Amino acid sequence: LRQAERVDSLESGSITVRVRLPRDDPNTGTVETHSLWDVRYTCNAETPGKCTRWATPVGGSYPSTGETVIDRIVNWQTSVPASRKVFTLGQGTAIAPQYISVRIEVPAKGERTAGHAGTVILQDGFAPRNIN
Image (cartoon, rainbow, N blue to C red; front, side, top):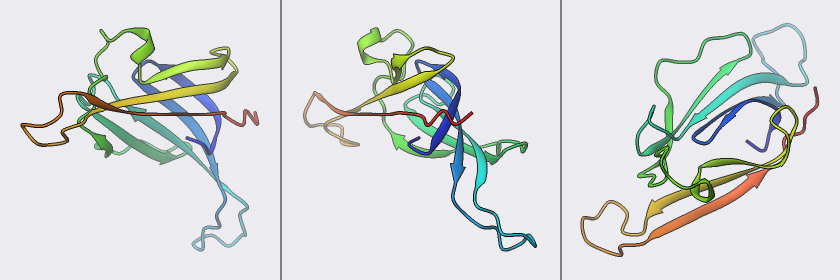
């Protein structure tokens, strides 16, 4: 998400961004300074209990299945309070976001059936470059 140059959609449990990656494709005859990708993360009822990532080159189609990046997410439901949503607009507007907060809650006990009853909170954020 830190490579995002713009945010195309932002909801409490999903986000779609355009990223500019520095790379050169050896399959083309020209030297490219970057490639553009559309990347989507869902951490909601579409992928219950998981945060899943889909990526496609701009103009392409997303694959039918995404890659699970974080499993056992506790705060994926739409009924969680606003302070516990996965994605929230920190600064700016929906049209021109300046900072987006990301909060993921996972069980402290991990996959075990017994263990700590609390959660571990993974919290960070990013400022899209808003090149366009």
